[in-house]
Length: 156
Image (tube, rainbow, N blue to C red):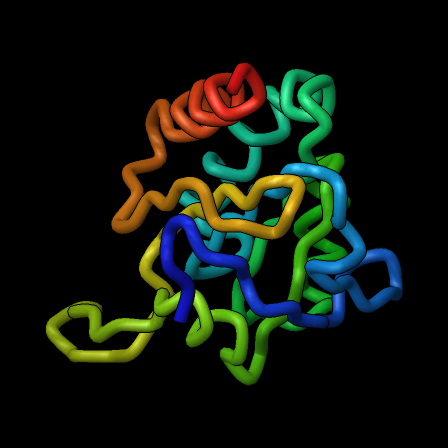
């Protein structure tokens, strides 16, 4: 499990672009990881588009963005292409990273209890330390909040 102020354990997952990405690949850069329930759904699409619209501002602050869900790489590739996301999406089909970040919880879907990803975002600094976390995220305005936190972090 991750904790604010502590180093995040390295991970490696399959990603868009026919590659595997690890936390260590972003050493020396800030990293935003956002977990979302499912590709091609309204809230998840809006969240990805919001991060994409601020992408240049994030990269100007030497930050990378990664989206994570349990969807397959193939589904991610189609979603990324369709929405023109400038960042990679990671496939966590076995929920390893989801469990490391404690984002799998019981949810009520149409009257049934299911385990699913609770929309959450994490800001990791250049040294691999978790600096901020947002859990049970509401999409509207969220990407801007993450950018503000990154701006504050880079001013320190």
